[in-house]
Image (cartoon, rainbow, N blue to C red; front, side):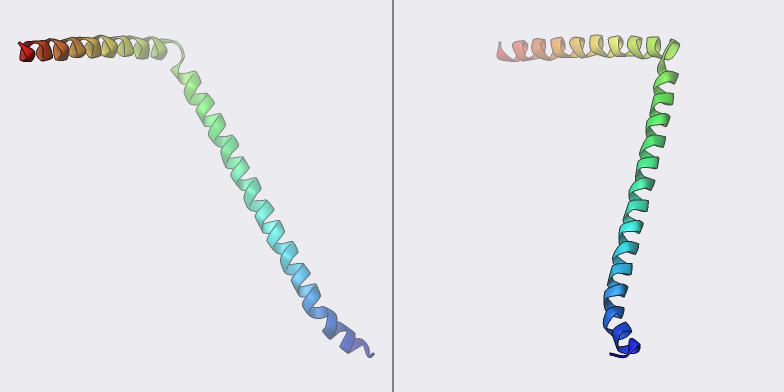
Length: 87
């Protein structure tokens, strides 16, 4: 066989292998980029959480307690209204 016919036989196989390698490389690059974004998100989240410590935490806790008291008051009012309707 002349060398040109051998090259023609192997050309589609080589092209397919090169295409596959390119696809795997692109997929791997994409996966690495998403991991980097995830790590950046985790760093940003931990920064936000550290910002919440201290005075912010106390303020948030006080707000939660106020909301719990308001919810309890509203539940008691609703129960009282239901009792009054039944009578």
